Structures are given as structure tokens and as C-alpha cells.
Length: 368
Image 1 (cartoon, rainbow, N blue to C red):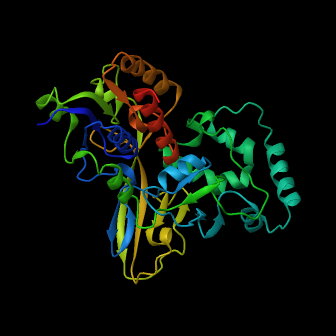
Image 2 (image 1 turned 60 degrees about the vertical axis):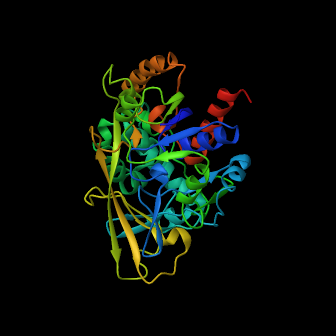
Image 3 (image 1 turned 30 degrees about the vertical axis):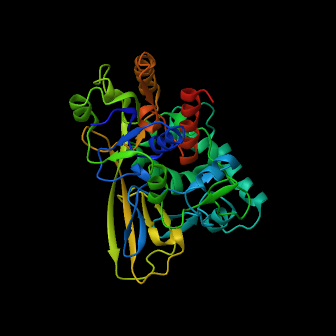
């Protein structure tokens, strides 16, 4: 095989931004991915002429104008606003928690009424030093919002009771005393018209790409393939789990084509009661205001991660963060490897933050 300046492991957003920028600087890149497609978790595929977010809903949002302009080089974005709905038993509520939520919950109209109810519930609980996530959430939002919209959903996400989860997982729970269902506060928001995969295709246009390729097998057969490596896989796996495994949560998807034009009337509906096994249902056509005759839905099930299952997000508790620091110390000794992305840096990233982190790595690498 040819020799490359960079072997980039992972054709997701971090690796693709790095490849694009390195390529612009005249560097030769080989990008490999163990999946049979590029774009990582932002991969979208056409099903019934609908762009399906195969690995869960991805809504691009940022307050950074430069990053918004950067990503708009690669696709035109629509004006989609994320306004999820929560389903609790037979009740529907708007998210994030706002005056539409409180009006539906308590039959009130004014911010003063909502604030008074929440303050009274918090006062009656008398929690001073929260000992777990449940107490932390109750101290922030009171009993009703917690019981109906937080407790069951959080327990499904983490696979354990809220009383067994540390309080620091919920540092704040934004309460909005306005009638506004826009989930994000960011200035810029939207979905790329035609899906996300096209963005990665354009970023990787100047690089060689190999999918269905396991890094460890590949590097064993091609040890001198590149001068440097950009690694976006699991940092603990890279070092042979020398200090043990970091913990992750995973997600399982059940996707279904329905012979109807509109299943739930919204792109995202969260199921917040514990008895419903999935955390949410995504109806993909609504991300792009689709008018197709059929629809595609995905049910999401949160799951415990184990080797062989796709890791989705890190469990950033004290134990895992301490373990990551040991791996990071090892990583710092490897001047031939750049670690990036949510798995390489053991950090949950929104898409705009992934781009920022990748561009920071580019600046560090090329001194610009």
C-alpha cells in the first residue's frame, strides 16, 4: 500500500474534519472505519425517500457563528427547531420545561403561579444536601416535574434507580417561565437538507477511505502505513485495556417503516414513564418537513455497554474519570498519535464541540 502522512481511525465528524483540513494543507490521508459506511453516528441513509438518522437524532445547534459558517460549507441547513414532546402515561407535555408544560400540568396561566407551585414543592421537601440524583432533581424542580418528566426517563437511560445515581449528573435543570418550546438556547440550529452523510462525503473527498476495516488488524498488517495516527476509537482499547475498561452506555434501535404518512406528529417524543421500555421514538421525516406517503420511526432503548456492543456515551463519574486520566497520561507519551472524539477523549460532545475540538487539534498539529 501507499505511505500516508496520516492514518485516521474513524470516519466520523472528528476524523473527517481533521482529514479535510490536513488534505487542504497538502497532506496525504488514509481514513479507515470498522463500520461498512462513513459518517460515524451522524450517518443518515435513505429509506422510503426519508433521511433516517440511523444512530439516533442529531440536530445541529451552536452559538458559535464561525462553526455554523464552517459546517454550512458542506450542506444547506433547514430551519428545523428541536421541540420534543414528553409522553407520561396518557399525558403529553412540551419540553424543555416551560410555561406550556406547567400550564398543562397544573392548569395555570402565569409565570408567578408556576414559580409559586414549584417553590412550595421544594420547600415542603426540605432537602438541604442532596445525597443522590433523585434528591438533587427534587431540590431543583419539585415533585411533579421530577416524577412525571425526569425519574422514569433517567432510570431507563442509566439502567439503575435515581437513588443509586450520583447527584452531580444533574447539575441544573432549566426551568423556563415563558411559552417557548425551542429545546436549545443556541443562536443557530437546523438539519442539513438531504441528511448528514453528504457532509462527511465532501470532507473526505481528498482522502483515501477504507470501510469494514478493523484498526488493530489493519495496523498489525501495515505497521508503517503512516507517519502519524489520528485515533477516534476507545482510548482504553487502544492501550489494550491496560488499566481496565472504561464504562459506557449504549443505545439499541428498532426501526420500522409504517404505511401511514404521520405517526406521532413530531420528530421526537420522549417516553418518561418507567413502564415503557424505550426512551423515545424518532419520526425521521419531521426533521426535514417530509410529505412522503409512508413514514419511518425508530424506538430507542438505552442499554448497558459490554465489549462487542457499540459504545455511545461515557459514564463520567469519579471512578471512570480517574481511570481516563491514567489512560490520558499514557496517550500523552505517544507523540505519534492524536486522540480525538467522544471515545478517544472519553467525553460527551455535541456536534459543534466535536468540530471545535478537531480544529483545535489541527491548529496544534500544524502550528496555525
